[in-house]
Image (cartoon, rainbow, N blue to C red; front, side):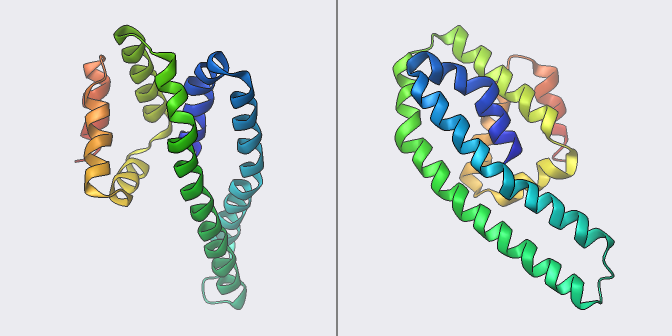
Length: 157
């Protein structure tokens, strides 16, 4: 989720701001609303790490963590559907030329590499449907920096 937010803020929001500043403002406000949920999840993880795994407090912490994750999952499911329906048309309306598209893709891969540890990258790929994982890997392979592409793809081994 953090990668998604970083990518939007660094790469897409400037494009949305160019198309319509109100869209960028609304998107920033939505990100601000999600921060408490994500911070709560981080705190749950910290709590779980220090609690004896046989104690009732551990079970309660796991239950709270599970509830937050389910809430976040549903929220983001809706978020992604809204983006596809409402924001992607603005991206298409901007009509980036091939060079701008390549630069945007390269910057996306930069954000991906900055935010992916080996384990996170594998976890992400395993959580995707097969066609989604292939699409994700195809995007990475189109990066103009072939060393960066190779470095990311080597994480799969």
